[in-house]
Image 1: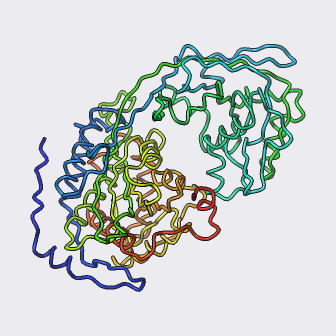
Image 2: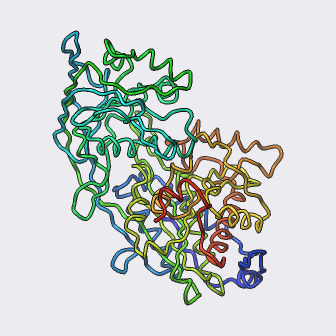
Image 3: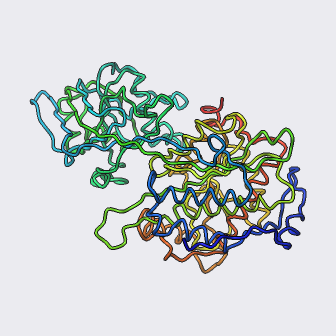
Length: 550
């Protein structure tokens, strides 16, 4: 390997600066002069995004190399191992389920007779991580969106008898739902949980005009060969496989319409109600279904890498602030082009590298912060936020003592930003903590510019939220420090040109001032959270705090 080892000898100017601190208005101690070093951040990104690592797919040799590199950096900083059995690794067993592409069969019986449909032109069946042979057959019931949301006064199952039947449900959620709360209730996990609770034996999804606009059925064909991945529980079974639902499928719109022939409402009438902002009520469909498929299983393992800086306060050191960043990416692209490696430089070598440099800054402090700090490089983010969920459900420290999570995922470091965005900060008093930390670096905290996207539910911090832990997902803001640069255009250009593509590599233009500033903001956030008198708290009456806090 060509990456040179970096000496961690104490540098005089850094130590002098580290001793210069000031009391902030909430009683925390902020080291206002901690300086991140660009060459260190750059070396991390250049190693983690190198072709040698092959895109760091979960369970791959490349991701194992990345994990060993991260471990070696933690050791270099003198951080304590906080994984399993005195190591830096929390190794997770995963099951990959691959659907046999020749096996899916769909037969629908209506008053007009029995008809078979073609896979994948008419329907898409997904690998079942719990069942190698999947078979579901029974009468069909339309259940609206398939959502039960008592907090929002909504229950699609009210008045329906779905026991022993197969649910047919619209994708997504009602437009009247608040964005973030709606993302929770409209998730596949919540929908399937409520289907099972009501006695359903299968689950069929049908598109809406909105879902077809956002993610057309044809786009789903790109993922036919992508395995379903679940981590294994202590009993050796996959967590979240929903084996009680014997099978499921996504139907093409034209196929879905046939289910509603001779029904109380046609699919076109249902779509018309949706366009008017109404939510159709459920009803029995005059149809039955037989759906079957076969899957093959493969077991892999992949590690989270976990290190800890113990706090200095005799009592508060038993509380933990967690930094997280995912170290995995999506591996090799299915393309005939010469460059088929998804290097994942921005997603998320950049976030992991910032976390590593943040860890180094903390290790250089002459006095450790009061609370302990955990640095967590998670695996399996691209497979469904799996590594972070696993850690949050199986923490290597007492779960009740984890007080906050700061997640770093895909910071776009192509322009020098003048603000930061902390998705989810508005749900807890972390908003004040993050705003104070940003002020210490001379920038401001801006509100979520895309509330309709519900990004608060879509990265690794959400596994902590689901365990009742206040969390934020931090990214550079859209305000540029250079008036000639449009930060929003820079961000959107990355998404349109490089996101989940081989071009997310080291040939992109990095703004190293942005990398330095983003690291220093993160350091200040951790310093604030670990030294403030009280642990982070959900806002009174907050939806997520109420649903998940224990």
